[in-house]
Length: 482
Image (cartoon, rainbow, N blue to C red):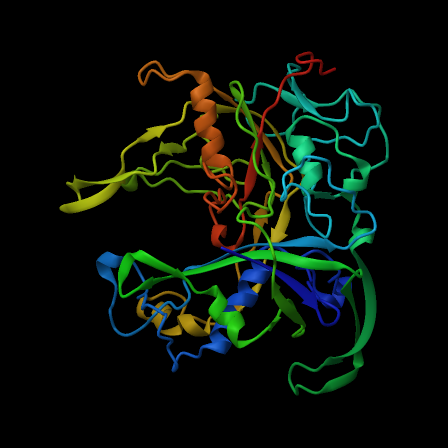
């Protein structure tokens, strides 16, 4: 997975779902993760048209492998995966000096990536109460779940002050270690960008000409000097039809052009590959110590409501704030621990051998508390040009262009608290189960931060949704808390 920086050549426009006619076109906001995925996907199609297949491409027919039509249709660039956009501060005067003895990639003062602030932090100068913690008080949560054992709260005095919404990697390292971050590592939106309003003349939808009676105003995003947009992208392709021989092909796009169109109104950005170490510039989860794990979202996550289907063994799930991999009745985690080693076993249902992990066991843990801010709407528009024949063939909506389905996503910064349990049947301790849960939830899995292994959003994971990082937690009254 490659890391890139975007430098806007002009103002950017990332409008939300509100109509321009009624809300004024609020476009000065940080974009959703899907924006950069759509921009790269469109850039790939422009750079490599359908009638000019590339030698490094492999064909990918639409549908499941057991019943693909094999009629010449392809789902091109289907392996594209992104993460971002995140603000990147370059050469800021606020950048502190690296601490003595710090590893080379621990603090890069010339290029600092920023991430959304955790939701369990209070605007408080008191070192004892700056962090919200689960407490044993019952009946004070507004989350509709009867299985939650604790309420997340703080003993800090009420205040109208707010926590700066953007934190550097150094601030996240302090937070995950249970230490209060330095104020110089926290950024407000005004530190990163400004909004500029512009008035324009509307277009008559019938004649497609300017209509002097239709005036509108729109807000644009202007990044501060030294602020860039950071992302990671991957486009892994099979070589010679061999699934074990994969090649990273995202560089093929930027070998042809150094600019891409991002956001609305055809705004261009210059692309440059970031100079980083093997580790990705995201916060790395701390090693699980004890039986408690807390998981914090670095990007939004979408967990839709699921209807029951007895024939397929699918149970009903409300979705929304609750991850689809958590039982809505008991809070049990339904993720499974899998080793990296694969072996071939015979599948009776399919009548053929398949590859399975040596270890595939349920993780013994429960969700006991959560701190979830209000949801954010995720929407968009698609032309669906490359899906016309596929969707017509499969009898769906005919591939007509139009708005995408709207989702209410859990915002970045949401915090989920888990308690692991010992499993006597497997002979594992609660500490071992907590370590397995952390490996299943951390975006980097078992790796030291060199690749993205887990995207825990049910929908839009390939577009950067569902990235999270793990730490530990304790109750109020434990470990000197409160």
